[in-house]
Length: 262
View 1 (tube, rainbow, N blue to C red):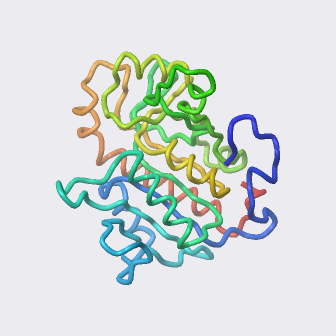
View 2: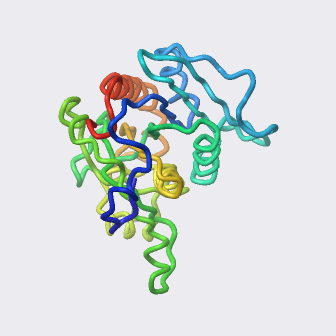
View 3: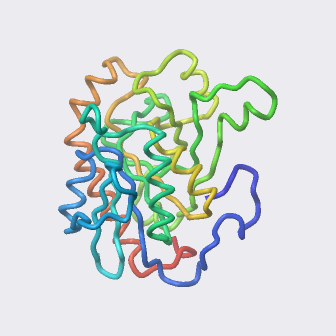
């Protein structure tokens, strides 16, 4: 993970790249997205949470092959009982997970909207090449770049080639729909996929120098004919299965490898 324009390898990754990856944190925003992977990897809910008392965040953990897997779900909003989606929860759980678990690698997995104009289709799985925000508009010199917050994901050319995954730019905002202003920013970001967490995870991971990759499965076509919310709900179960399969393949590929081999 590196800030845009950062050419220093030392700044990209603080952990040694020549030892096998051991501890992985997977951050997933929705319970529907998380539970199939929890079951597939045979993870167990942590009954003695590593997080502060009172927060709804949930950690599932276990050994999978040679890896120590920690899947973090932000849990249900304490007042309304819905998934704690969005950039605020994503930032908090990413920071807390890094501090508590000291991962070698973070995987932010989840569903996303896709743009047919950029070649996305429902069910496609993408690895994000970089992440940026589309709803932090600050029309003041330099602050405008801060608002966009462009950050590169950790480069995984071997993984992408081996698993035949698509690669695209990810744009993040806190709304499911897309206003005309958001659309202009998404176009400026040259994004293929759109989510509500990725760039926030990228920001925290970059601050703390933890390599991070983003695996996103397309539930809806943002520039299509169907209303986003309807198409998202219609396709969520099937696309979550595709996400589950892709993340498992990613983990299988990572097992036994060093960061430099990804």
